[in-house]
Amino acid sequence: MGLGDKIQNAGEKLTGKAKEGAGEATDDNSLKAEGRTDQGKADLKQAGEHVKDAFKK
Image (cartoon, rainbow, N blue to C red):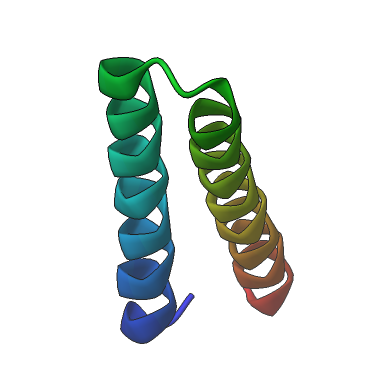
């Protein structure tokens, strides 16, 4: 996994957490759900990168 990919995935996860927090603060369920979705996507991308790394070894 390249450093750029790690940074991008971490950024996406932080963005998702921020959206979820904003949704919680404003009682906006759709924003909370969007934040959770963004975090899930970032986690899946990171898992895929780990799988690629495992096959490279």
